Length: 488
Image (cartoon, rainbow, N blue to C red):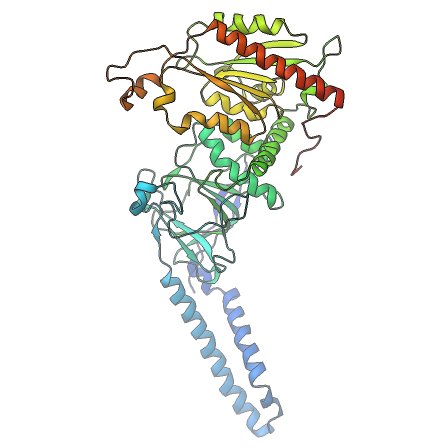
């Protein structure tokens, strides 16, 4: 009997705000399937069959009983050997396929995608599209992965295998594994959040079960990091810092199988608006708890006159897509805010705030005004029905594609009100002609000017609208925030 490999060490799934600590990770090699445990199982199975089908020999004459038992014990032994041979054949028959199927390169993120292209998602109306192993659709088989390639996903591979017949030299990882496919990256907080959302939705609908590890893929290539903002949001949501599997101690040709795994490759695809709002509600609530903030909504804050406070925040950028004249823009919004009783203007820069400082800022904000950029991802942390005002440099409308609308979508998905966007008609000139796609490399890094008349009227309109809604909410004593988190 082959000897099982030594156990590999992995960090435990840490508690909230507690660094990871090492613990032993339960592993098992495929060769150890010839273990006493499996042999006993096979033997019991055969003996049971023997007992059921040959119980009549218990009534045979004493002179023939001994010979009959010996004869049928030989048949039990042969049965065990045949079953072990069958398990070995199943092990040999496990077929690994490329994680990135180049045949679908032109339609990489569509349909079954080029990631695990032979697999089809579980689809439930209004819910995330996902794959779960083992499951009825996988016929009880586990997901196995092979390869540690970080530059060409077609060199990494996947297969399905029955727990009793894992591939030769396979390592079995216990617990729940989240396998994420991201067509973009995990460093940008918007793209990272988009990849995380379906797992939060699955978590909410499946008894709030949390993962032991995350496996991150981009185009089938392994990734081992994500933005610090995203890591903390995951820690807050799932109750522990994410352990990103790096397959330490596993060679490139050694399969790794998972006791239970969930695969996502379509981000928010399939989710209804109600499902997305519930998912963002959970993340907002968990982020506030993590940062020791009150779960009471904005309606709870009033000024000395007893009027609801309206928090208006200018969320500034530095460098690309920043305002050319910040002080002038601040002055316009400051002037309009001063006309509304209870209005409080806050000016903040996203690049010098911690995660919890951003959560606190959003919890004090009813109107968020900001240039298009990753910092706007924070908008879902405001109370529901809060407002968003977005600004763009020149050239984006024609050339930026659908990606320019992501924060408009996010506002709708998280229960906010997107109040439109202002697009600067002026800016850097493009030598190729304004409709040439090459111009986007210039426009993408452009800065944003101002239109005092438009900004004034826009700020006045949004402020008055929010004031009316907050007065109505205060009169009706309605609160959009939860008093306790789901998965609490």
